[in-house]
Image (cartoon, rainbow, N blue to C red):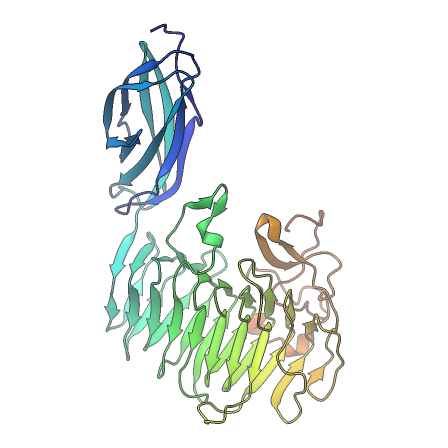
Length: 446
């Protein structure tokens, strides 16, 4: 009963990161210790209730909001679990939420702080878009089940829009998708988990958080500009059914961290400029027939969660059943580098695959299909797998610096995703999706 006999806590603040309104938080825990030798009585445990959030407790196995006369034996401890729910906020911008849990012991009040960032979201549950529709950027969309763009409908996504996909949710496109962001307002498609797997490891770095983006037969004229698509199961898959009409144009975008492939195309016409394809165990990109044009692209693989089994780039000419046409492929000023191997074809004689001024990890030679390539090169990425840094820009001393053919880089691809000018030096361009920016510290990103 001595006022000097009070509690000790394992944390002073319980942090929930970003919490989407109307969805609820993950469950956090902390420990209350009784450091004295005698039993102690906590006369009151309750949330102060001074914020817009509703926090609920589970104390020593019992759930509620207010607890009375909780006893802890001398030298013992109990667990407290906390979860919360935030109502719709007045402002669409993220709002900091602060509250506390008060503990009264022997007339002394102690507190553990509660901290979260609330974010309004707009839920879309099994929505099928049957007419031309705009998604705007006021607050993120939370997609359950799948978002489907029906045939003859166009979905336009405004710059700065974020789409959060629940577990296994997909973006399925039978019509047309126009996701056109810009340098200052990229479009983000990611999973809906803002919390941590363990410690400081965020769910957002884990592959397989949601399904991916699928373009089906008859879907043409799709555009992904300044779009960041990451942590999927299936990446982006394109199966328009005809290589005669352009199905997808990727521009200054990122397809990163898929459980299978980052990009799979089947008998489709796909063009990519200034785009990063990175990290997938079965191979970064797979092109099954059709028509492919890749200019100033980076194909990198340092996948973290499983052995890498496929090549960075897999070319497939045709199949015996004739389900897709021979591959018509041209790569210009690109990089292929990572823990896996570069390509699946050792001999491209008789194919319509042409590769110009590109860097490969492999030790090879130019021939009738490879022109002015950098063999056994090292782009020197800013990658640190132990620290979960997967940054595919170029360090000082990169073998990709000034090795590209400027005449093969169109004006449309002049600026990279960060706004850096490929033509600034007046000479050769740097290879890959990113312009080299001189770094002062080799371990830090520019």
